[in-house]
Length: 423
Image (cartoon, rainbow, N blue to C red; front, side):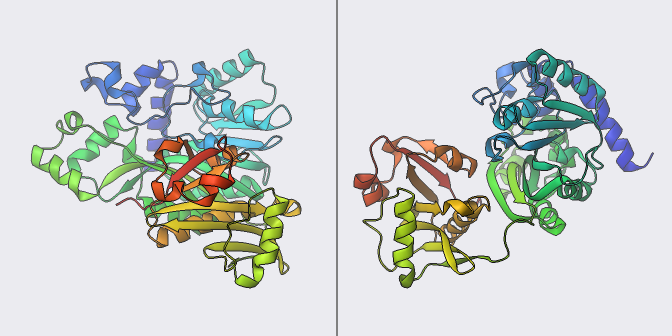
């Protein structure tokens, strides 16, 4: 066998072993701090995230092997067909099933028979006839071209030798304008030689991870568009773990180096159905009347909009203004406002692209956190990476804005997102 085949067999053997272990055992052997820990509490949470609050969560399917919550960000809709890569015991597939509803379909793909058996038993117990689990290699998926609306995966591609091939397969199986949301492990900087061992033992096969920029580059090279980091989190390895592999001086140097192991959740789209006539531009003063008209049609306040439309972006389809989003800047804080798209154009992900553009502009302007207030769209903005926060944490400058202080009701939800690039 060549090196890639050897690695695949090692992965298959490993996940055959963990299929029948408890969540805590798996965390100890793959996602936690391993046998050096004195208790379960020492390792829980180093890598895996909490699924228990997500609709559709099935405890028997949660083996604690993930590194993110891709289904939370995947913008799955009722009726969608979703493919889950490396589906394991079915954890993400069952969460996705809640989102697609009875009229949608979820296909899990895994090449470990023990995992497939566990997933199928779970599906049968739940009575799900629109969730199926197929044996297959995600470098050569057992599905036809262009059948999926969404592809998700959780901490799997880092185990695959040929990641470029997997992204090519994802592109093949997605419908035009379909998209993926994938949580995975990447590296920033070169890990110390000793830490390579710690990473492999304690952080879930991190030895198979590649540099973050290379990972994102593979996605773009495949042909995906609108690549967006939905979430990024450093995998923190405590000093008591690092001390088994690095000296005190090496630990201190590592902490200061900016090098690290990161969990990322990344989104990207397959092009095709987005009309080439749709353009995105900065708004000008002469757009003011049409912008106000669109916002009023969406039930959004317009009283405080400056006629010059500073930090507003618009979407044009055949020279018709069809979407708008705005930003107010208060030092290092931003307030996202006025996101609206005409109803006939809401199938082209215009709002997503407008928001993505606004957040990039905010970052360039030195903004570190962007806030918004909404009465109806909190679920949408959660999928864009925003989180709900209490009004008490709103910076004073933002709290005094017209949007928050007077125009929106006190019952509206406040959300925020960090947009500052990590050091």
